[in-house]
Image 1 (cartoon, chains in turn blue, orange):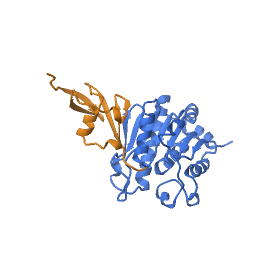
Image 2 (cartoon, one colour):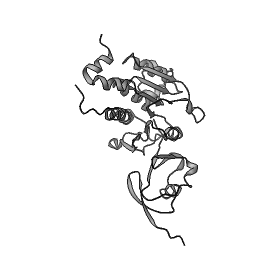
Image 3 (tube, helix red, strand yellow):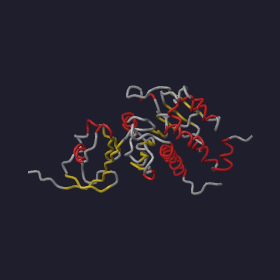
Image 4 (cartoon, chains in turn brown, yellow):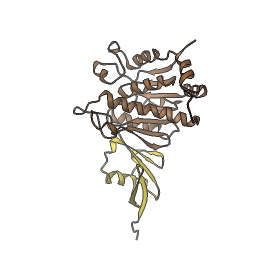
Length: 211
Length: 72
């Protein structure tokens, strides 16, 4: 029977690598412009196990860059993204937390995640992810600086150490003069997602994918 | 008499010359960084803000300053 996973196995990956990434646990903190697009790239790439956190609902103003659709407006983002992702791969396994992460509850989340994607909006929450999980062996992919329309080639991956990466230009803050738009936000999200593929690929030590 | 001497450290991957009595807090002040927007990794360990002034840098130390700006 043809399924999304069988197509990935037949056409894009060696079976053992696909099985490997299907068991990698991905945590995503925030389901806005970065989080929704990171998840899209990872689900399409074959990742299956997710733990996602967001307290917010989908609004009209999100649609310029976030993966949601008109009929998602008013839904909780964690519910809306799960429904969209199931349309790509119905076999995904998603733990949804409709909560606001804080220093009081962060210890309840991502305890077995292999990767944590920081996709929050506010600086204090971005910091909290690295400060809380930074001294573990988890791979942490952070976002910083993707507002505006200019300097698009400045969006980059900076490796902080073997398991911490920051993606963005580290300068362009979102504010009233510098709003977020799809091209730079998606570029940032795509580079973030690419790190999960690159690191898992390297761990698996494959030299060539079978096409 | 303790004379200041220069030591070599790496800040965000770049070689840098600092004094042997410099703390992490001194470096943050030198670069005029906003403490509330940064996270510091010192030799691959996250250092909480309250310890920045307690850690004196040593030769060949690696400091990573992650600067966060809003948006996601």
